[in-house]
Amino acid sequence: MKYRELKRCNNIKVSEIALGCEGFMKKSKEEYKVMIDKAIELGINFIDMYISNPDFRDNLGYALKGRRDKFVLQGHIGSVWENGQYLRTRDIKKTDTAFKDQLKRLGTDYIDIGMIHYVDGLSDFEEVFDGDFIKYCLELKGKGIIKGIGMSSHNPIAAKKAVETGYIDVLMFSVNAAYDMQPPDEDVEQLWNPENYKNQLINIDKDRQELYELCERENVSVDVMKAFGGGDMLNAKLSPFGVAFNEYQCIEYCLTRPAVVSVMAGCKSIEEIEKAVSYFNVSSEEKDYSAVLSKMEKFKFFGNCMYCGHCAPCTVGINIADVNKYLNLSVAQGKIPETAADHYKLLKHHAGECIECGRCEKNCPFGVSIIEKMKEANKLFGY
Image 1 (cartoon, rainbow, N blue to C red):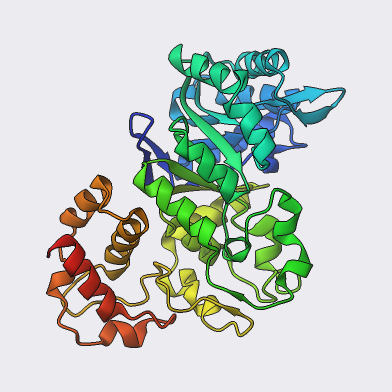
Image 2 (spheres, rainbow, N blue to C red):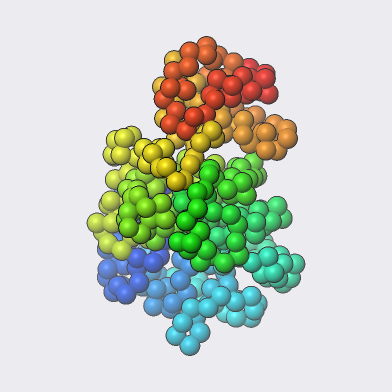
């Protein structure tokens, strides 16, 4: 297992493969315990808990008993259970009751990430951030009941506005190659609407790319939901692209996006948990999402660095994907952000060392003018 830091949450380290909670439903408390045992064995330490079902919370609390400190828990604020069903609310009284119920059933006095449950609409954004809801979250953080404030979203416009408030430490966002081509929409259903994939799409949507880069600059950590598109990305008949990816390609795609720290895998069995974690043991060829993206005719990723690393190895050892990432962050900002400057400085080799051999451009499946990118980075950073 590998780990990345939640930089705005005292650098808490979370596993790159984490557990979403969908896979736990309809299982006994003993089955919960077995799954948590397996998670610990494989090094998974990060769990998302958007479901407000009291049985889920009771059973997870049972499975975590005596080992709460081994996990980073992401609990949702505004996810409630009424009349036997899940609801989202902005009512503070209902929110507080549900949050306290979550603590009690889990057997803990704190949640690591208090995740504002989900904000896609701009009117909802205003209700949350201009009213009592964000004040409630800040109060929880001030008391140490949550260590960081998060927000879940499927809309890059709403997500960007939230990050820009300065309150958000962690963003839970829907990420995969198909969704990344779609323009922003307040209706999450549009992400998997087949009608939206009938016409040719080109490159990552500008707002989504800007969101990832903004999070990277502001040290806002992104944990990923919908990495497999609910399983559709793994099935050629169901995939929006009409071609299938494997689990490893989906995970690799997500983990190479700026700011992403972890992929929430909705595993339903021990076998699925083991399959997700086997990502770390498979070959680079099995993880190579460019092998799929570069061969699609209708959907084009071209001319922009996808951070896939396919350009490697560089003749002089430059990590081209990282150089391009810090270059893109700086160009988007209009100046060199301190974080980009620091990370660029730490690279073992820099753009100024490029000998223009062209080897990388022959390897790049997306037609990126890498030599020009290295010249641009050299000019911008000064070496």
